[in-house]
Length: 446
Image (tube, rainbow, N blue to C red; front, side):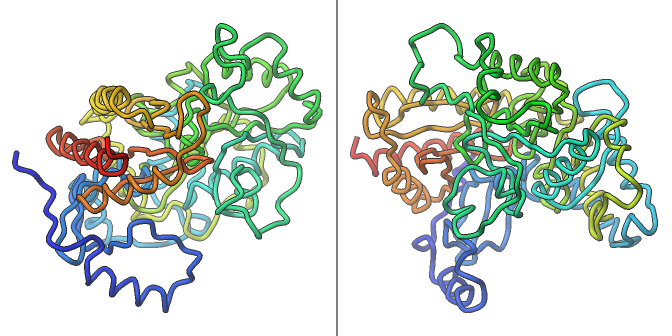
């Protein structure tokens, strides 16, 4: 397979810059744009901009495109749906595709108990509704979230989110009764190496944390990402998760697992929960659920989901017929093409390359992630672990110049993450990794 990257102009090119000029005059500056490019076309893991530059996409629409850009099954399903129904509002008139998506999610998500699924538009809306359901079902007000968490940009989403800049600065006051617990960020834990295993897995750890945090009897739910997304692709220690789940059950606290970015094969299993043998009370999905169309879901135990009074859940666009058609097509693709297995294969290939790069580049302090949800944390010194934010930005810029769209992340802005479509062809993946390594050489001089 010949190289797919084709750089016809500087990136961003003149046509992209012209659109950015128009954007600046029409769109608020608070809406970020990390690349400066404007796209016209995308196919699987390759994108084309208005200047004719062809790039490899390691961003994946921020984890939305596990099944690739414009998956043919999705395109066909949405085109067919356009001939029948584009909107009705499920609260007014039912349609079969909403019910079918709910049935599929009830079957696919962890646990064999009876479930119900609510469809909404975005991950943030899913989190909001999961909190509503948890509070209603338990009669308790408090919610516990974690350091480094990201759960959306709504008021409640920002309250649950940890990072102030750019997500929270200047937007308060936020929703009350939100409490923050330490996340098992073992790479930066002061106790790392001083004991065997994660300190959060130790007996009595969560009892001690809650003793100084909030009365467990007032907590409706703990909201958790098993691999932190925007906070830096930090993987939760299994022992810590088991201890937390045990503590939650003992105190009547619901576990709400945010699988918005980790779901649908990204971690090498269908859900990150499957790595932990964890059955959450409520699970929130979005992003790759509908392959690029806006759709999110809250799936949970039937007795919890049914606790809310009629009319208490819903929304005008939630479970839109076009999005539902897309989701059903994508879930078929994920089954037939064994997308979760692809997550393992792609992840193994990336990790092998990342491990080799870590041996070459001292700035790589940590290689981490589950499946194909992988990241590199960059530091100025491996001993002090001082974050190398400026270097991270330089590598991102050098990669873009060479035709690779790359995202950074992390509380300290020093993590390079990979969210390439899991359907990427191996030669395309290798070409993208070659460009990433070349960007490291250019930025570090190594």
